[in-house]
Every structure is written in structure tokens, then in C-alpha cells.
Image (cartoon, rainbow, N blue to C red):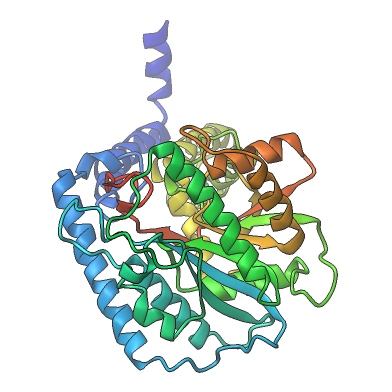
Length: 403
């Protein structure tokens, strides 16, 4: 029965054409595409040795360090806002030294890169609707030995959580103590920033590197949402995430927007493929249903294989194309907080103790579960890249394929 059905199906020229297109796509085209783009179905096909990937990341990191240092050497602080000005968005970089791990001799200088890129974006941005100021929040418990930070404090206002200590060696903490300190650092940096006469806070970690359009995109969307500080916001927003791990942004997810996106993209591609196919091979109307069905199945599988992350990147063409969705749980590399939203978050963080399995991001998710009225959004695609292969939390070099 099945054999007879297959023979009947293969009588259609279209089926033979579709099989040929499928073979070329999934056995030649996509494997080659995965050489350039991550998060395809063939991503693991060309993965290099971990040591090779780490070497590549270091080479790219060195290029970014050189670019940042070149800009900072010329930067004279022009355009820096005074403390008397009302600042729409205070951008604060939370930092801690990564030079004491003794894992190897490499100095990643993430803070230099992030400060350089942030200042460069603020300096280049034109026709902004909101005002911005950049701050550094140093939470290292040995500030005097954080040598990378010292030249940057002459260019960017800096808050220090700890005063210089007389001890030569930094305090060795357990993972529970480290997670608790990270939570306390987070609350401190946010509170210090709001003392600087700011309306909203962009709190970012020192290994979150801004994309080239970060300022223009957040300026557009914060203004559109009424978060400029000059008038009441249009929505009661607690925070807006600007980064979520790319590996968690695929179509296979519990987030409600993902599957509709898959089928919509499938329908768009199906329409294009059918139109082109009918121009090349005109078919009687009675046979067109199977063409639509065949191309729809092919298109949906193609979209899945290419990966949502790669399709979403098309939105980077314009700030108007970026998508705002409800924020998923996990991860705090870069988040914009409203003043009332951060006060709520900070108050809750101070009331709980973080430990293994319950970090500050988990605590924030727990608060959202207890208070469904707290509105959290996510701007997609990501406005930041996580470059932190050297982890200050885990005190180790991370797998380059999950950074």
C-alpha cells in the first residue's frame, strides 16, 4: 500500500523537483552556510577543537582591545553630562578584576573594550531623543590593585563599593558567598546610579559588549514607551532586557511568539517559492494544492534548520524592525530598569540570600513569579554580545561554544 502511494506521488514532476531541491539544500547549502553562521541545524558539524576556538576568540578579543585603546587615547570626555542635568538613562558598567585568576597569563581587558565601545557609541550617536551618561561601578574588593580600571576612571565617573584594603591577597570566597556578593554588588551599583539624577538605569556587566546600534535602538524604543523621564510612561514597566543567550532564542521554546514566527516565515517563503516555481513550471490549477503543501513543509523545515537567531538578525537593518516581547527568565548581562522597577527589585534582593542554584537572576525570576503584575520585556535581536570567556563568577575559562 505504501509502495503504491509512493509510486503515485512520484508521478508528479514537482515531487522529483522538490526532492532534488531538498537534497541540495540540506546536504550542500546549509552545511556550507553553517561555516559562517552559528545556530543552524548543522552548527556542530564544523566545530573546532576547544583550544582552537579559544585561540580564535583571543585573537578577536585582541583586535577589540586595540580598537578600544586607540579610541580611548583620543577621547577627551567631550559630551559628558554634568551632574546638574536630568539624565534620561544612566548607563552603569559593573566591573571586577579578572586579572587574579592565575588560570593563564592572558589579560582579556573586557572593561576597556566595553567602556571604549560605549563611549564611542555615545560620541557618534546623532539626533537622540533622550540624554545619557556613562558610569563605572567598581565592586572589586581590592580596588588599588585593579590596574585596568585606573586609567578609565579619568574618563568616566566611577563608584567604588570597597575602600582599599591592607591585605595583599583577595578574600577567597565559596560559591555561595560569591553569589551573595554578586547580588549585593548589583543592588549597590543600581542605587548609586540613581543618586546621579537619572530617570532610568541601564545596568550592564563588564563582559557585555554593545552592538553598533545599541544606543539608537534603545533611544527609539525607550522614547516610544514613554521612558524619557519627562512624562509618565505608557506602560507600567519594571525592566527591559537587552540580552538573552542566543542559544536560548531558537524556535523550539515555551515562549509564545516563537511557533507563530516559524509558521509565518514558512508561509512567506512558501508563497515566494510557489510563485517562482509556477513561473518556471506552469501547472494546472488542480495540482497546485500539492505544490503549496510540499513547499510549506519544505519551508518550515528550512526555517528550523537555518535557525531563528539567523532570521531574527534581519531585524538589525533598522531600529524600527526590532521586536519587543515578554522577557523570558534567566540572565542579567544588560537590563534597563525604571526607577520604581529597580526599587522593587533591589528591595527584594536585599530580603533574600543567594547561594548555589539561587543567583540574583533566579531571585529576580522568583519575584516575577510571586508578582505577575511586574512587567518585563525583551528587545530582540540582542543589543549586546557576551564576550566573557574568563568568568569572574566561576573563576575559570568557559567553553567558547557557550559564551
